Image (cartoon, rainbow, N blue to C red; front, side, top):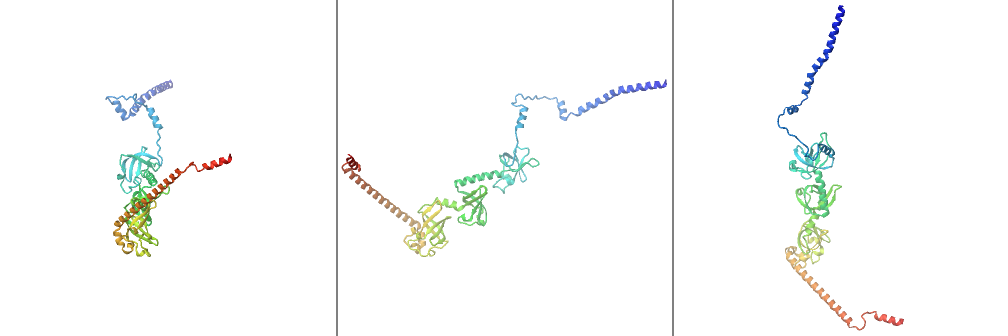
Length: 400
């Protein structure tokens, strides 16, 4: 009986424990769930929950597009930044070795100081590029690990410079350029920021020495080749063209004897070379030209002919002689009286020209009178004016 009572008590206690365990479990977990819900609130959510002020209701009824439309527009927009593309950008900040450029990419681009200008290579970046000014930039690299691109202004200016040079060459313009360096063969000039070679043989009045650096010279193109990046210019061609446009036949010019040849002397006149033929030096015969001139002598000559296209000038001192043979007797007197003698020569030439025109008019008038006489004689003749009329009549008589 004791065993039966003990078994009954244990069974009752186990059933009660089994019945009360779920209840205690539920009671224990209820506070834990409530605490985790409170912990999930952020600081902003708490402030929003406790806010007691006025609330602004935002409505999108007056907006012409919805959030879906905006999302579709963003998805349709492509941001492609490839090497050599030209994009709009604005310099927003100067940095060490260059500046920061906003081109609308996910990261700002960088403009190195070496790519900031084609001409102002020795200046600070602040003096070359202004802030907050929109301009074109060329992308010259791929994105780095930070998504940054390198851009250039120099590449764009380089292409624009070649376009200007091609136009100048087509128009055969005369332009000014500064000499920046010299070498054995000539000088180096900057033309629209491009380096051009000036051969020493195409310099007028000076040699390619260090003294030439910094001078600005008038030039014309001899060769323009963009594919080979080659520019060749000439100072002599530009000077000759400018001076030839100001010269005319009969002008008295000063020059210097540069060389003597058996057929005459070459005279340099403002960078141009003119020929003083031996037959145009004096009315007297010249057996030895070296007795009259020496290289380096200064002379005055009259221009008797010129070729502006090829830059050639024919000179004469014979026309400046007050008396025939004065160039051999006293050339200093000839040069001293050159302007006066030239005026007398021009007056004599004008008088001779007028005399030739008068003679030509007399001849023309005489021919006109002779033609009138011939016309009068033909009118006085009897019969038909057709010289073949008699022949046709004779043929008709024979046929009938």
